[in-house]
Amino acid sequence: MKLEIWHNIVWSAYKAKVFSALAEMAPQQGVDIKVYQIATTNHDRESLSAVDTSLHRYPYELIFDTAYSRVPLKDLLRAVVGRTWRSDADVTMLVEISRPEYWAQALVLWLQGRKRAVFCDSTLYDHHQTFWKGLAKRVMFALCGNVFCYGQRAREYALHFGVKPENIFHRNQAAALPEDYDAATIPAQRVVKDSGVPLFLYVGRLSAEKRIETLIEAFARVLPQMPQARLRIVGGGPQAGALKALAVQLGVDASVEFTGGQSLAQIFDHYLAATAKVLPSWSEPWGLVVNEALHFGCPVIVSHRCGCVPELVEDSGAGETFLCDDVADLAGKLLAAPQRYGDRAATAQAALAKIAPYTPQATARAILAGVQTIMAR
Image 1 (tube, one colour):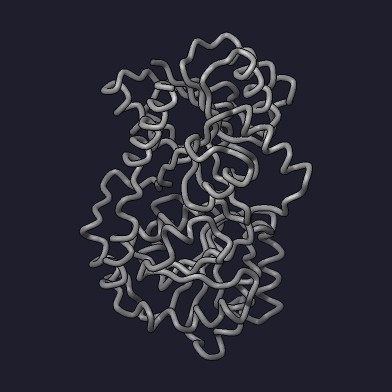
Image 2 (cartoon, helix red, strand yellow; image 1 turned 180 degrees about the horizontal axis):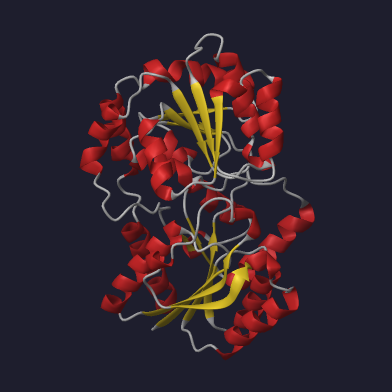
């Protein structure tokens, strides 16, 4: 059986790990895998971290050696539709439903009567829902037939837009970890990294949907009661200048550090040191940085709109939610964090217990099981 997977932007480390695990397991089930990478990255993510091609241990074809957003649409459609039309894959998996090339692919696969599926990482919290967009999503899901999603909220999204329950396949979201990662050492590392100073951490793009201004405003309320506290903001993006200006305006710039984009090794070290990782997003289909933080024993404070809340935050012992855009609610959670998570070793153990099932291998097994079910129909 031949499986083709289409992936559009960013050779992300976590997908590299998942696809590599998939390629390792697939031959045991008689599955031959090929991944099409449309482009290397996207211009709005170039400020985060460099692409490490050594992580991509699976058969792939790179179609355009440039940023995805820089490829002209006509060239994109020609390359994607042509390969799809000529393909002899038994199952084709598309990475999303919103882009024109995936609409074209889904239509070709539907016309040819071939088995197909789409990955879905959206939730009903992501964007404002409208009638016409909702109708388009229903049509696209109908064209694709089968949906692979991770998390309760993504499943609810697919059901909302008409996908039958038996055509929805669940998979875990998994972070990419260093080759030498050892969970058993994390609690002790968290203890060693404790500086005694409350350190709150944000990691990700500096863009409007992340609501980082809410975090800075909440931190400004915390600082008078906890003057030694620090806020570290890791990443780059279009809001960098405005957020730095906000910190100055609120008089907290001396306690707020903007590091810019950093390597994964540097980010992992920040997780070990932080009192808590904060994700204040208004739109966050999952929130992979939550996975990363928990793998390094770091508790999380997460907006209620983030997709991972039911699986990774609720009842975790190493995380809690706040109402998105509610500065007072977030400030209260920040103030309580140093005491709530004061036993760093015990908090790390709780975080590790919660995140343990979320591995690339588990994700790969779930994908293969779903593909086998599709083929058997």
